[in-house]
Amino acid sequence: MNATPITEPEARALADAINQVSGTRPPAEALKLIEMALARAPEQPIVLNAAGGHMYRSGNARRARDLFEKALAADSDSKVLWLNLANACRALGDKTSQALALEKALAIDPRYVLALVCKGELMESLGERKKAFFFYEAALDSVASGAPAPQQAAAALRHAQDVVRDSRMELERFLEQQVAAVRSQHAAADQWRFEACRDVYLRKRRVYHHQPKQILFPHLPEIEFFRREDFPWLDVLEAATEEIAVEALAALAGDRAGFKPYVDSPPGTPIDEWASLNHSLQWSVYPLWHDGEQVPDHVQKCPKTAAVLAQLPLCDIPHYAPGAFFSVLAPRTRLPPHTGTTNTRSIVHLPLVIPSGCGFRVGADVRTWMKGNAWVFDDTIEHEAWNDSDEIRIILIFDIWNPLLSVAERDLVRALTLGIGRYYGDGAPVLGSR
Image (cartoon, rainbow, N blue to C red; front, side, top):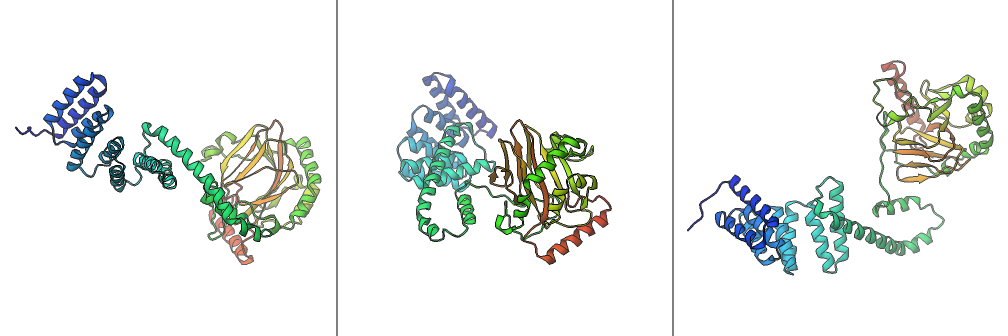
């Protein structure tokens, strides 16, 4: 006798009942109730799937496979059913059918985390470790991109992380052997860009992009720290480190009122990550140049620093640049990841007072300040700083033109900046430091 057709809500209620009795009733009683549900709805995929799940958990993989196949005959577009069939085939030792079922699931949803993990496990069981790596990596990438990661996959994903990590380390060692002869052949050449390329491929290095708050100059390379050899005048700056440090410390001791919070935004300003440092002397500055103008009283108190700055190719835009200041970071203070205003300029740091526990990151490049060792970086690439010590940290900061701009481009940017300022009026935030 044919079963009386049932509605979808009735089928869902039967499936829920199967799932409920599956783990709460004695096996014989649960099986009797499940068989009754199957007799009531022998063609409903949701009921067949629930019954198949019970059979699988009960160790009857063959019956589970039959039920999943019957469900798929009615609903072949269900990735869950294909995955469940793959699991039943795995329990039966049928790896060929398991692989086919997983392919079907992934054809429906290529970012199906559970199916990707299962495919990785299958490749591992077949001794195809390198193929397993790609499926595990795809699973982890899918999770990172927002794909659901069910709780039951937690252990499998941890295993996937281990396999991916070990595989990348093995690949790194192999590739280093492959390129060793060529690296040796060009030992005198600068290989830092190649090393960054290699590390990005191996996912040891994240790629960061320009994110200026105001003006983006397209087609400039995204260089975190510029090469020192491109700035021969850094020798002049570094040679004056001791004299500049003395003036910075003297200003801190004798003109404390001249140090102002670097973040000093009025109420209602969307300061986002800077909220905890707004109006705070945890990060304070003593300006020598501000918005393209010298601060006479401060310059008079720091004549040697001013004399050195006068010899350097500072960015020059009337009313906007250069900016130059002593930057004081209080003990146990961290600056959040942030970006600057425009990539048409670059930032110079000269470390003056550097206790241990201080660091700086631009993009993927993390460095430690060393007194007297200056560097130039692009502050429109995400960067952050920290002082984990119990003492203050002081550096001299000033801006220069991006060295990759031509003279004509500098002149055009200067005119553009002034034009924006004229349009909006005094105080237009075009080249502010943050």
